[in-house]
Image 1: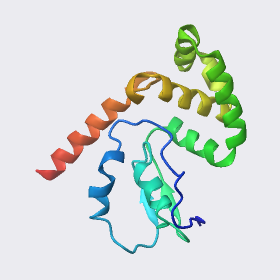
Image 2: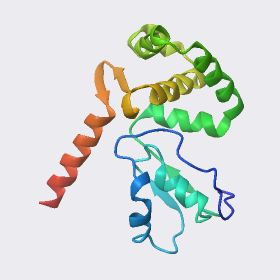
Image 3: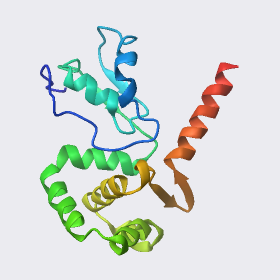
Image 4: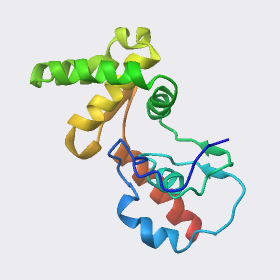
Length: 165
C-alpha cells in the first residue's frame, strides 16, 4: 500500500521519456475517474501519470502496479525505491566523471559481456545517466537486437491503430 498524503510537490518524474504525458496531465485528468481501487500502469515510461496521482494524494491506501516492457527501466525504478542513497552516490560519481569518452564508454557497455555482471545498482545508475545525457531521453538499448524507445512507441501506435479498424 502506498502511504501517499495529499500534495507531495516533490513526486515528479526523474526520467525523460518518448511519449511522455507530462504536458497532457490536465487534459488527461479531466477524463480520470474520481474514485478507483488500485492503479495499474502497463506503460510506465517516465511515470508522469503515476507521479501526478501520487502527488495529488489519489493513491493513498491503494496498491500501484507499475509495468513496462523495458526491463532496465523497471530495474531503475526498483533501485530508486529500494536503494536511493546508494544510487545518488553512484550518480554523483558518474556526474564527476562525465565527459565525451566516459559517455560513449558507458553507452557501449551493454554491447559487451561485462554488462551481464553489473549489479542492479550499476545498471540503474548507467540507465539514468544515459537517459539524462543522451538526446531527448532516446537511449538505445541493445540485447542482440537494437531497441529504441522510439521504435517501441511506433510499434505500439501501429498496434493501436490496427485495433481501431
